[in-house]
Length: 173
Image (cartoon, rainbow, N blue to C red; front, side, top):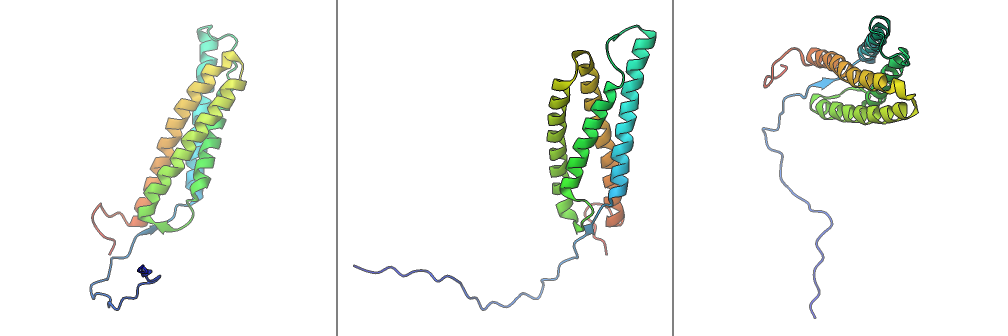
């Protein structure tokens, strides 16, 4: 019976590095939390105010939604604010990291934010009185889109600043 040879654990090579291994420096970015927190907070407060004002106006001038509390709009806005805080702190945007990694990380953070918004919506809509559920749900849906737009603008501006305002395909040299 023949014995099989076991392959070596490590492979030693004697190749020398090629002379053309110089690569362009990779762009590195970090985003300060202040502008992101400001955009998230301002957008959620705006959506809470809008929802509150719409319910109040419908009650006052159209005599509709008699049992609905206008303050329930703030529950929806608060749920969106918490969800975006969870998604933002999960990716820790204040750390310096390669620009290539930012896109994937930011999308992962928005995925976390989306799931957190859905979970907050289920909790708030399940526990809210029936007459307030429509207001909470609409403010959460509109608030999610509004905050996403505001945060995207802040992140894009910060990344463009770190990149040095160069267009796609150009290097920062």
